[in-house]
Structures are given as structure tokens and as C-alpha cells.
Image (cartoon, rainbow, N blue to C red):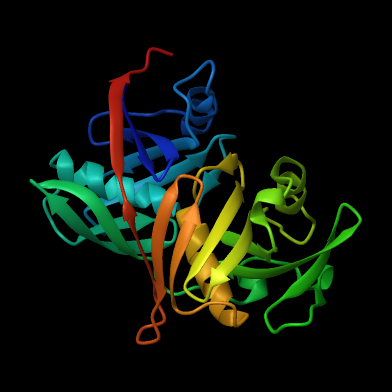
Length: 281
């Protein structure tokens, strides 16, 4: 099976061109190839497939084999692959995802994609739709913040879905957060029937922040695009941030905007192809 390794600010996946390759068991394949010692090494597997609704279709599997609705860094790389490898020359490009069909504006140099602006659509704020169980929460001091008990301690979070669920937790020092300890406990809290992506955020100003992520099904990752979008929305909802923010993630930076004009969130960031190969497993 031919594959291509790509990343969006360090959030790396193995990409397979489904126009040419057939993957019979993507759940098992994702588990095997994601292993960083015995496989290719990645945060998961992304299939680029034909679509009757858009230029291409994307299916995304976490490192544990679970299928997710969306991946913001991943969809930028899907657009780059599709354009650079001639699956389409449309710009903007339309990608079918578990969130629906997204529109992506490509920024090219010498006919190769360097960065992508993704229209991520409207955020979902209704707790049952995210989904979050309200009876597992209590109201916190600010609007749109809720308190839950994690490992015997109180944690305050704001919840947003960008097609996949996110918990945004604000802290004074994001570097001091014990992510390996807290991440899995928040992810698997009883309040989240489909588990959740958890983000710890340190605010520098209304237009700049630093965040660290524990991704549902993959653990600690260098970046999470949908999570950064959720953080942008949460900042506005809790009066901590403006509608345009620069998010610093361990793998790099993303520009986010939650526009008042259409209520859509826009994410701009790089997409990088690192290498291709043949998987013999």
C-alpha cells in the first residue's frame, strides 16, 4: 500500500489515496501504522476518497482506531494532497467530512499548496448536541462555563463542538499542567458520552494565547485544529478573547477568526508533505 506522511504544525497523519488504494480494515490499519516504534508513526490515519458531493472525501481514524468526525489540521493536508497530486485543481476546494462539506481556500507558491484557510462552519454550543450530559455538570461563575469533578478535584470548562467535541480549560500556566495525568481523565469523564478532546489554555491577551491538547483517541498531540477553533469560540463566550486570535500550539501557530457576519469559524495554517513510502504490513 502506498502512503504519504503529512502534518499540520506537527499534527501528523498517514494519508492514503483512496482513488488508487483500497483499505479493507482502516480501524486495524490505523492502530498498527500509528505506532511510533513498530509502525510508520502518526496521530492516526486519513483516507482521501472519491465523493459525489465535493472534490474529495476525508475519513479520519485516531491512533486507537476510533473514527472521528473531523480534523482541522488533517483537512488542510487533504486539500494540499488533492491539489498537489492532481486529484483536483479547483481553488477553493471542497472536502466532504463527517462534519459536512467544507470549503478550503488554498494559498500556493509555484503551483504547490503552502497554507490553507478552512471555513470550519458554525460552532455547536448546545450541550446535548456536543454531546455533553448537563446533569454531570454544575454552573461556574462565568457564563458558558461549567464545573465538573475530575479525580476528586473541581475543573471549570467551556464546551464547543466543531463537528467533534471539545472542552476548553483556562489556566494561569499551561506549561505546568500534568497532561498525561489529567488528559485521559477528562477525555473519559462520564459527562462525555463520546469522550472529548481536552485543551488547556493560557491567555496572553485578547488576541493571543497558548494551548496544549489531549486528543480523544490519540493522547498528547502537537496540535489540534478543530480544538484551536473551539478555543477561539470559548474565548469570545467567556469574554477572554476577541474574534480574531493567534493560537500558539506545541507544533506551531494557527490564525483563527469567529466571524460575526456568518457565524463561521475560519482557520488558517500550513500543510506539509514530509515523505511517501510503501507499507508492507
